Amino acid sequence: MRIQRILCPVDFSATTEAGLAPATSLATEYGAELTLLHVLNFPFAQIEALPPGFDVESYYEAMSDEADAHMAGLIDADAADFMEARTQVERGVPHAEIARVCRDEAIDLLVMPTHARHGLGRLLMGSTTEQVVRTVNCPVLTVHPGDTPAFAPETIVCATDFSDPADDALHMACDMAQRYDAKLVLLHVVTLWEYDPGNPSWRFPPLPEEYQNSLIEGPQLQLEDRREQLSDMPIEVETMLVRGFDAAAEIVRVASDDVDADLVVMGTHGHTGIAHLLLGSVAGKVVRTYPGPVLTVRQTEEPSD
Image 1: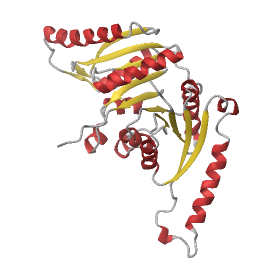
Image 2: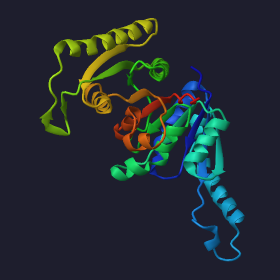
Image 3: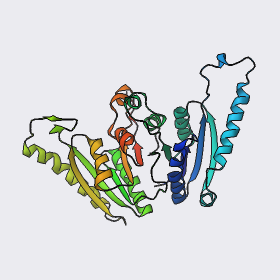
Image 4: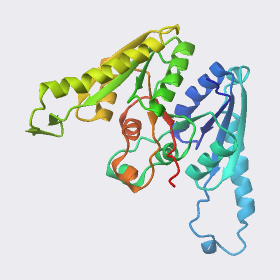
C-alpha cells in the first residue's frame, strides 16, 4: 500500500491537536508528504451588509497571513526531519474545499479531526467531518478530541461485511498492523433481530435454529478464508463473529469493551443523499459513536445508466 500524500485540515480549535498526532505519525511511518490545510470561511453572511469601503480582498489577505503564522508552529521540528511538510490556505466552504483539495491533489489519506457534537442536531445537520467522509474518495481517518495524543495502535479492529470496500479496508488494516506491529482483529456482525435493546420489553418471534445456524456458518467460513489469506503476513490475526441487533453498536461495543482497540478500520459504500443523511450507514454510525480513531475506506457508487 502506498500512502504518499496525507492531508490534515486544521481550524486552530481544540480539535486541531487531535488530528496532528496521527497525521504526523503516519507521514513519518510512510515517508509521506504532509499538508496542513486551513480553509478561510468568510465570516460575513452578506458582503452587501459590510460598511462602505470595506476591502474584502485585504481582509482575506490578513486572515491568510494569520493562518500561515499559526500553522508555521504546528509541526514539531524533530518530526519535520523525517517527512516533508507544507501548509496550504484556501477560501470557501470548508467541507467543499477539503474534498476539492483531496481530488485535485490526489491525496492518499485524509486525517480529519471532528468536533465532539452529539444529539439530533448533529444527525440532521451533520458536521464538516461527516460531510467530508460522505464525499471524498480517499480513505479518511477521523479522530476525536481526547483521543490518545500518540498514534501507535497496538490492536486494530477491521469490521467486514465481505464486500469489495471491506476487503480494501482489510488491506489497509493489514498494512498498518504490520507497520505498527499491531494485533489485527477481523470482525463480522451477524444481525439477528431477536430483540431491540432500545425497547427491551418487545421481543421478536424466535428464528428457527436451523436458519440461525445458516446465517452464522457462511460468515464464519468467509472469516476463516480471509485469515488464511493473511497467513503469510507477519502479523497476529484474530477473527470474531458476534450477533447483535445493530451492526454499528456491536462494532463499537467489541472495539471498546472486548478488545480495547486503538483503531477501527472499515469500508463504506459511499451512499449519498437524504436517506444517508437521516439514517446513516454502519460506517457513519461508527464514526459518530466510537470514541477512538476510525479509518473509513470509501467506494463510490457506480454511475447510473
